[in-house]
Image 1: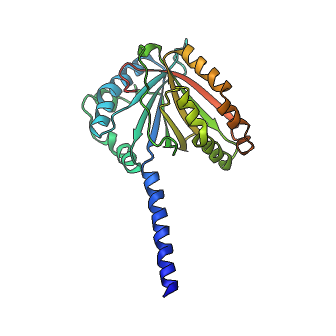
Image 2 (image 1 turned 90 degrees about the vertical axis):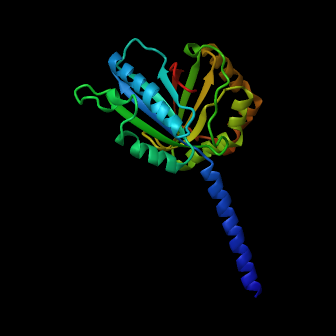
Image 3 (image 1 turned 180 degrees about the vertical axis):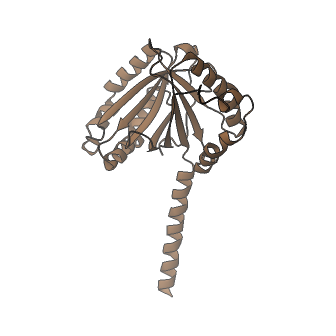
Length: 258
C-alpha cells in the first residue's frame, strides 16, 4: 500500500514536471528569418510589393501582428543585396501550417510575385533560418525608437560555437545575465533565438536596435565597460563558447512593422 502511494506521488511529480516543461516550450516563439538574395532593382521592387501588400496582410490575418523587413546598409553594388524578413510564430504548429500552405493559394495582391515567370524570377535565391526563442525572452520585442526609420540601425548577430555543448553553454550565458544587461543598457532587443535549422550551426542569433549608428556604438561601448558583463565574461563556466561572430547592420523598410 505504501509502495503504491509513493509510486502514485512520484507519477504526480513526473507529470507536473512534464506539464511545466511543456508549458515553457509552448510559450517560446518560433522565429523565421527569410533571406531573399537579389541582383536587380526590379527584383527588389517586386519583393517589396509582395511583402507590403500580400505577405504582411496575410500574416496579420493569421494573428501575427509584427513582421520585420530589413535591408543591409547600402553598398555600391546590388551583387550581394538581400532582403531580410523576420516573422514570429507563437507555436511550431502555426509555423508549419503557414509555410506549408502560404503559396499554395493565391494571395490578394500577390499575383506578380506568385505567378512570376521562371525567366524573370523575383529573387536569385531564398534562404530560411528557423529559431526557437530563448527562455530568457520567450517572445519578441517591439523597439522603443522614435527617430526616422531611415536613420535606425538594426544589428543582427550570429554566434557560432565549436560544439553543441558549448552552444548551449552560450545560450545559458545569455539567459543567466547577458539579456538583463542588454535590457538595462537599452539595446532594444527584437529577439534572441537558438537556431534549430540553418547554414551555420550550432549557432544562436539575436537582433538589437538603435536610433542611429552613433547610438549603437555608444551602447556597445557601455556594454564592454559594464561590471556585470565583465564578471559574466570572465566566469570560468562560460569560456570558449563562441568560435565565430557575424554582424550584419540593417535598416527597416518603411512598411516594416518593427
